[in-house]
Length: 467
Image (cartoon, rainbow, N blue to C red; front, top):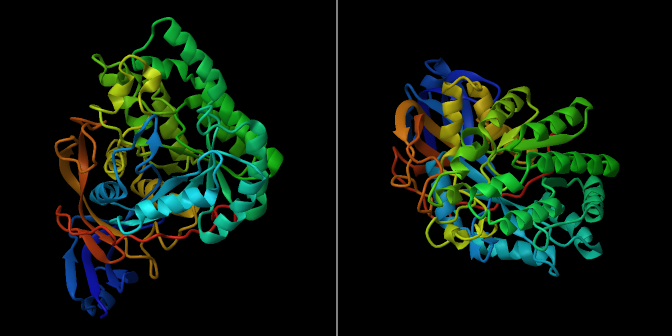
């Protein structure tokens, strides 16, 4: 049965264009666009018509950095693939790329298969996977080639978390050399974890146990140093590099310097670094634990450099690093020791709205909003133009966005499976109204009409900025 949906009267905003156009959807894909009121659009008929007058019609968001059900610090991220993808849909995100985890001593295949099993049949929106490599050796290096062919074309390495995910420079170089050969993209958590562990030990010995010390020991210079080192290792290997969750001005400067040399180096930041700061980490009565993530929140003055990096394209992507842990029962594992607070915070539902607020505030343009939240992550991770744009042939992942409604972000009203909001009480202008995933309405006028199992695994090609 062929189904046709027509979206009429909205302002279609993509990374490239803003046009008053009607959008025709057929069998889960964008069939055509035509200027609103034109003869072409006037002749279209559909089973369902959505009135988008005074609304934006935008591509569904692509969040290329989430951690559903991630094991960390003796507990698990509180969002499942079911609850997390439903919350993503509420926030106008229609594709996530999550991280499958290789355990030390085990194969990449075993880790990937475990994540396939977690996600299969449970997702409300489409999903892909990156592979976390915790154990780089001859066997796992060979597996990288097979994963790229399977559509898992990016691999995350950690310069942080010794004894858990950490890789040394030799292991990183080997993985980068392999990626240079097979087209994979290395994603780097760039913090000097060996040095950080020394500072953690010293802080605890001084009795400095509060959440704010998490930010003080994970120093800006140790992010900048690791970013610099990762770039140089990538140069030696002749490999592209994508640095995740960039939080500090000095790290942005390292990326900008590399890009000025024409190197294939890319950077991502997250809403928490753009909107929150060490002031939140210092909140009294252990409230700061809500904001413990790594890289950590920085002093407010770093935010200007991040916004500037997004405007100048020294940073290309805003993802969430969504990794929620409940304040009660999970974050409080570290009540007497900040190093035992699970690292991560919720955000998959808030990203599109916060970035629209950045448009309202004049930090970025409307098209840049769509670029950093939809098109660039899709290109970076080999999903464009299937995802990330509104164009004939693209998946009909479409959001009808009301740019005028003012809403207050709160744990009372969000749909993430976590007992607090990192943005509690913050008012933002703009709200998702209706969401289509591959042509199926999953949010209808602020009501969830989707279902677990609608979302499918999306294999990815290699990074499209390197073609």
